[in-house]
Structures are given as C-alpha cells and as structure tokens.
Image (cartoon, rainbow, N blue to C red; front, side):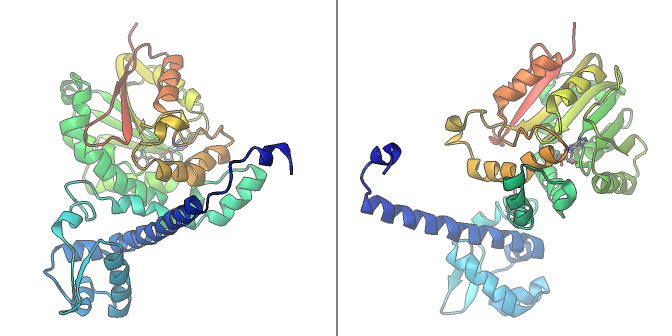
Length: 363
Ligand SMILES: C[S@@+](CC[C@H](N)C(=O)[O-])C[C@H]1O[C@@H](n2cnc3c(N)ncnc32)[C@H](O)[C@@H]1O
C-alpha cells in the first residue's frame, strides 16, 4: 500500500450502488439521444407531430418507412419518455409539448439537431483513441455531415434570431447595412447567416471565407438558389488572415475556438476592419474554469464535443487546441490583445449556451 491509497476514505457500499444506478441512467439516456438523431433524420418526429394517436403501421406509412424499424424506434421513444403509448389500442402519440423542442421549426429550438452530434462523433471514436496516444489531431474530412449539421444549427441558433435579436446588439448596424457596407463572415461554413443577410440588404456586399471546400460550395449553391449577386464565397485558410481596412462589419459564428491560431485570426480580423468598423463574435459561453461550468447548460455535451471534435480539429491544423470551453474570459482577453479595447459581452435570454461579443475599432 502506498501513501496515497492509505489516505483514501473507506469504501461506501451505498454510495457505490447509488452511483452504479446513475451510470446506468446515463447510458440509457445516451441510447435515447442517438435515437433522437434517427427520429430527426428520418423525419419521424415531424411526421408524428402532425398525427393523432396512431398505430406503428400508420406512422410508418405516413413517414414512408418500414414498419418493423419504426416500431423498434418507437419502443425507445416510449421507454425514453418522448412518445406516449396506449397498450389497449396499440397507438402512439407524440405530445405537442414534446414536439415543441424536437421538430423542424420548433418554437423552442430543435434539440434533435444537437443529438446529430452523438452519432457524428461516434464515427470518429477509433481515430480519437489513437489521438489520445499520439497527441495528433483530426481533419474536418474525418467528420462526414459535420457542415450539414452546423448549417442546421446555424439556421436555428443564428438565422432565426438574426434580425430581431442579434443585429440590434449593434444599434446603428441595420441603417449602415441598408446604406451599403462591406461585410465579412469568418469561418462562414455553409453560409446560412450570410445568405440571409445578403437577401435582406441588397446595397451591401457580403464575403464568406472558410477552410472547407464542401461548406463553401454549399454556400455558393444557396446564394445562387436565392438569386443573390452581392455575395462572394471563397475557400480560405484564415490562420494568417491579412486584409487590412477591407470591411465595415465582420462576424464569426462559433468559428474562433476551433481555429488553428485563434489569436492570430482575431488580430487579423481587427486589422481587416475599417475605422469605426464592428466585429460581432458568437462563441460558446462557458467559463474558462471547469469548476464554474458545473451548472452551465449541457456542459458535459460541450466538453464531449470539444474532446471529440473542436480540440482535435485545431490540433490537426497544427494549432493549440483551445477547445469548445475555452471560456468567455479567454475570448475577452484575446479580443483585447487583438486591439479591441472595450469588447461588450452579451448573453441572450433565449440562448444561454452562447456568448456574443460586440467589439469596435475606434481610435
Ligand atoms: C463550428 S463551424 C461554424 C461554421 C459556421 N460559422 C456556422 O455557424 O455554421 C467552424 C468553422 O470554422 C472553419 N474553420 C476552421 N479552421 C479554419 C481556418 N483555419 N480557416 C478558415 N476557416 C476555418 C471550419 O471549416 C468550420 O466551417
């Protein structure tokens, strides 16, 4: 026996039993989470939201899927407390109060988009295991469907609130956009936010840069489908971004912490602004201190995404791997080092998971 084990408190049987029950519940909840992803991707949630209590065959027919698979999925949904089941009639019902956070366009935001992340990272587990040994990172290409998932997330986290809640964080902005300014979205992904802005403000020009060829192609398709002539989307590594005095308004939505060199990017974005230009940055709003994140919404999920995606993709670019929970304190400090003397920090009531910084270039 060494000194450390000698200092351990006595083993408590009751605590161990209660904890094993907690672990079982955690694994059971994870099983429901992956089937929430299936419910979203098959469209079953959206179909069921429009049905009165129905038998599995009726639900399968309405969703144009096979009954046997739908019935097994329904069993998870029933035991997981998402769908109600009446054994007398053999019918299943998806209550509207549950549909309110699990369907496309749901008023409370669609949580099943977050569930997409579970199978997504499951697919890269073997690669991450070897990263634990070697310290290497991953590439975006290791995560098929990542940009598709982000586009869905962006549509509800950013685009749905863009005009009524987010842009008003910068009071003069909407007038300037009406008059005509140059806008950059750094790490624009599939460009959902930029396309929405470009469609609203035809006198302004909107540029989106992203490392991912697939995401940029998707953004170009969306802009073209919307008939826009005021957008430029380009594949570009923003690590050493150097385009001084080029833009009046710069945005980044959830696109700084997983960069190779976030500080270098922020410094480049500061320089890219013209005098009186504004940088609007959305990122994850957790704290840089683990102990302060114990009650942060979905903290375990965010640290998991960090370990399985955000940190390794940064390391994979040769970067430092700040991680998803780099913390608003780190972000604020980096904005100041970049040159923004007084970044304003906002947390929006509808979205406690994110932080929004408004930073101005003046002086
Ligand atoms: C979490 S995603 C956010 C995408 C988009 N802003 C959205 O909200 O959907 C982060 C984005 O940063 C991009 N990115 C990462 N490193 C980059 C780099 N060095 N240069 C340019 N873009 C990069 C990724 O390709 C990815 O699209």
